[in-house]
Amino acid sequence: MGLLHPAIRGAAAGATATTAMTAIFGAAGASGLIHRQPPEKIVRTLFPSLPTTSKEVLALSSHLSYGMSGGAIYACLMPARLRGPGTGTLFGAMVWLAGYEGWLPALDVLPPAHEDRPGRAGSVFVAHLVYGWTLGWAMRRLGEGREAEAQE
Picture 1 (cartoon, rainbow, N blue to C red):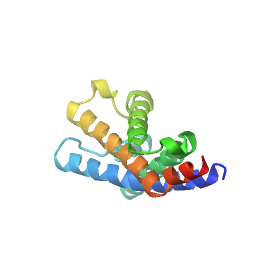
Picture 2 (picture 1 turned 30 degrees about the vertical axis):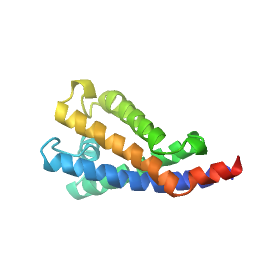
Picture 3 (picture 1 turned 90 degrees about the vertical axis):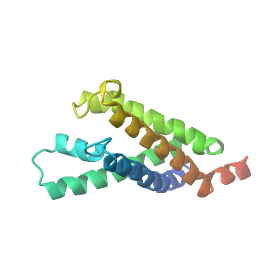
Picture 4 (picture 1 turned 180 degrees about the horizontal axis):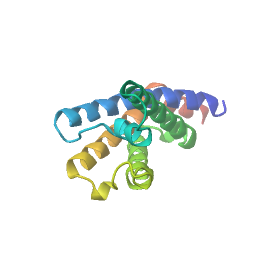
């Protein structure tokens, strides 16, 4: 089967997971916990001269692409028998850690999570846990777990 088939399924699961995560971001924004959703903040910081409409399109498309790529990576690295909500949630936490304690502060987009406002830091962390849980759940729904059991 190789890696192509799991990567495609992982990307599809990543799209589903990114949608769930975006709903958490929306709720956090509506409640005042975050002012701008992180993808929008990233694009505004890295591409300040883009027109507003282009920034919105780039924020949405890059967030979806990042989530789909994460899903493909998860599917290719995680043994099929272990893919599910538990390992997905752990993966989501690792993605959060790499971004919010790593590359986002390094690019001066956001402060490190441990120095950020608690409302934003907490809601973004929860959104990544939801992403991971949904990623693992969607991988199971797509049959990855059953296929692995049948092959062993």
